[in-house]
Image (cartoon, rainbow, N blue to C red; front, side):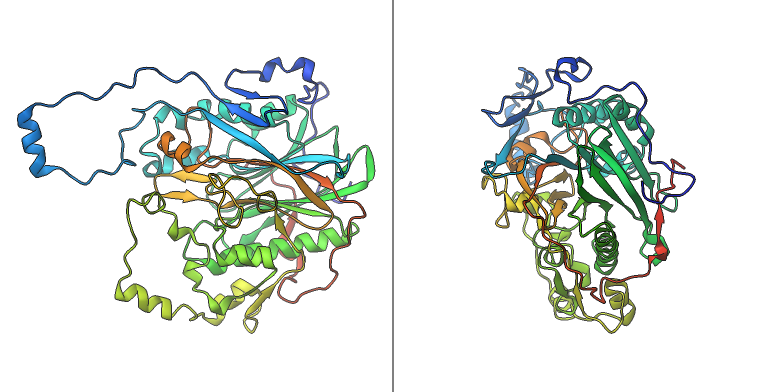
Length: 474
């Protein structure tokens, strides 16, 4: 194992564990709620019998109708009364490619923002259409457990985790080891990573505190794994929850830039191994930040830093066509001033106040964009239409990025808008978060290519702001 500090939260499973891979003994996780149908249907189903009583409407008197004709307000179907509608059935289908040439060394990855328990109640305005029962941690933990058990993934990257030890107890029983990095400052949540201890050996673990770089209290994780039965196969996995604030595009870029820098350094250290980066990047597929990740370069001066994430275009009323955005003279003027960056903002984004072209060498691709699904669930880029839904946001911010050396062979498709709309907002009865999990199965490619060894100035950074994984729950 690689070097690590004396105090470590890289936890090994208990001596007696229950493995999700052993199908004869899956009773502790079996449930009619979540079933993995046979491969012929390629569907994962989360379903329960819908309530049959949907006749909640009542007739009104003629006098009230007359009165309503003068006082009727504009009807917004998103502002329905909480929990007055049955939860829809949740069907998620696998999108697969031809696997005849795929390597037998495969593994399944999950990226999932599970909604922190504290955040669920701190921001109740985001969940005004959600039954309070579905926000309770006891309910959501059961739902999350059923989802995670149903996928039987090899590596699971979670964001917004503030009940780590609750989850660790469940995951250890299923044969996983885990690590956790809590956010700095007064925040209770952080990033967590779990992996099957009988399939992967941890060679090196590293955590990143962006506070040390002046990039807020967000954190990230990097882990180097080796497949136990194939010692020549190694893999670097990253897990990040990027800053939410839509206005601070320079900080978002700074966090992603440094994560890519550290990932490049570790991948080269262990022999140019493949890289997979999971997380909530708080940026949409139409954004400049997405373009940077996908194309490896970005001239930041061409963009307004307050619009770099694309989050402002994801209000549910706009997405559903119930409301249009008005362009005021001030708004138009702001667009003309979009390239007004201060030297400090440029330095935060690129690491150098004189550098305006941000680059990275990892040649990343998105697993979902690679395996395109139905137009009911995907946008023009091939990305999901939505991976997060609450009263103020409906769009995609979660991704599984991969480099040369691995390739996705199937992904678990997300949900169409009509299904999400019928939930009234997430979480719901069958889904434990306001995000949808991304699930992708990867294979190692034949003759994995070595990554670029060019050390770009804009992604190089001192090692001092990254720390070994020594953070237990604080």
